[in-house]
Image 1 (tube, rainbow, N blue to C red):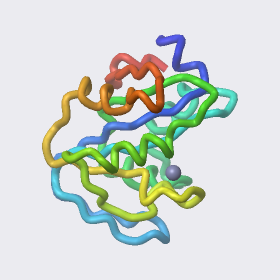
Image 2 (tube, helix red, strand yellow; image 1 turned 90 degrees about the vertical axis):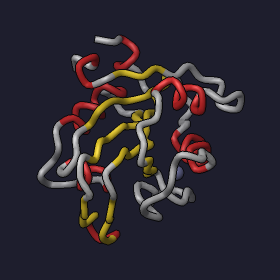
Image 3 (cartoon, rainbow, N blue to C red; image 1 turned 120 degrees about the horizontal axis):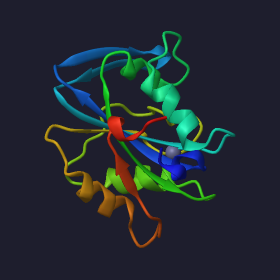
Length: 156
Ligand SMILES: [Zn+2]
């Protein structure tokens, strides 16, 4: 178990779409996706830390609470980037990923009901190297240390 997962912080989920997929995301609408990769930005500042939130994301809920829960019923979690710290980086990361040339925004407002971001969900048709995403998230502005873990490295 990675001790840093017990602490609070911000994270980006990596989700694989093996086939073109159409997902009804609650009241937000229908999300139509080609095969590829999804990136979802979130943060965990509750008692269980990042680990507590990842347990939720690893086990798709049949009673979706967040927009991402609808997606997880259709597609597997393939990894997570995360950074510890009391500062919530999720909105800054959403803005950073928005500027990444390889990423597009498949649905406006996704995961962004309570903030001013366009979306917290991003799509790439080709697999990104995890180190490239680490470098993007570890920008000089955020000055954080980002790690990537695959599901078999989580041991929650
Ligand atoms: Zn936001």
